[in-house]
View 1 (tube, rainbow, N blue to C red):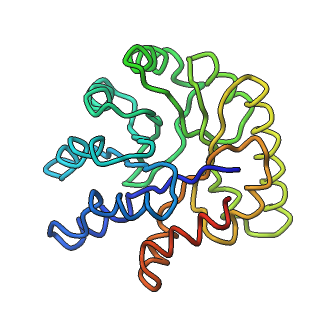
View 2 (view 1 turned 180 degrees about the horizontal axis):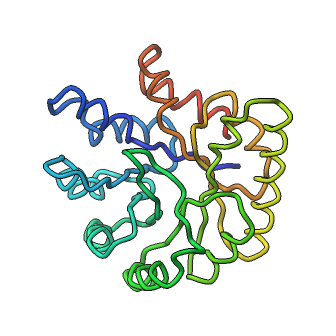
Length: 234
């Protein structure tokens, strides 16, 4: 049985767009968890004058499932993660307000140092990476507990043939990671349709989704949107 993580970034984006205090991701968490989600994923983007410090300060006390905090790899973010008492931290790269895979192999020394601090704080560490054998080997080397395979290329494939090739690569990389004792999760533009083949991959333990759930919630409500995804994943 897979776990389902709900990324609440789309909710915070709506709040920012409206320039007000609503919708409040903290209020949404209770509904998401009651609908059957296994974890809450929150991205720290480090935006000046944002409500992120307030969110992170109270998130841990509100979340009753599992708290996965996404951060860019720097000392300030690491300290925020430790202060927030997140169970898991996922290292990412931000590019023009978009979440991208981190280049583990190119930044091994820097990442190893930061990961050692996180693990010393009792935090499980993951990294959002491309489904690539060298990236997986580097993730093991620097001390990651998990990897999160980026499914963007699979989702955005122009043809069915390319999509099948990307899916096979994800499957192979998930198997390779599991053999190296890494936990495996997956995310990246997933929705109620394209996730169905991914959940057939035994080595993938958790699926993390966000935008598609919030989009569906506009029509059926947040509770039902989460429940619909839970039904697919589990």
